[in-house]
Length: 253
Image (tube, rainbow, N blue to C red; front, top):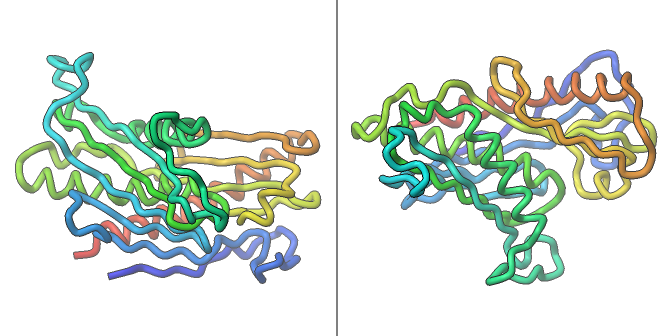
């Protein structure tokens, strides 16, 4: 079963069309297929436009040594781009870690841990694996969105089997990119927009409207507080739509 969404926001921002026909305030077409990997405790195929990420969640008894005896669980993430995900072959990560991949998996882990009640998880670990099939911008935000669905499904199944408390998740969390291209604030940048953006920002927010992660960088020219406020406002609207899509995917039988 899959959920496909074509969503946008109609508001007071400019109606200029982008290269793919979207308005500045529109998300790319979003598709979430829960339980995509049947052998995983929880999984989802997350598609945002041309970006496709397989996210799996593995519920494993035990915690890292430094966590033993605390009564608390742990959540950790790994992120990887498959060799053909960018068109030209990307070398597999073997003994030498890819700095970008390590940075992104740390972000994914931080964001997902923020909504977990570790005392309810017990001394168990959830491993989140995010593998990019195709990259067309926004891979880290797509990975966060898919990883939340996978983790929620894994916790739901584990709670049903008595391995953790059903109240392990305190909130939902979603993420999206925003940026400034040719002086205009855009939601959910694809690759062609990302590479020319003056400003690139990634936001992660809970369903209670609390921000978990704000990563904003001036790539070509500085931005002012009014532009920052506009990016945050647009990002918040986009994440609220994504949270609704996640909720529908998680609820599927």
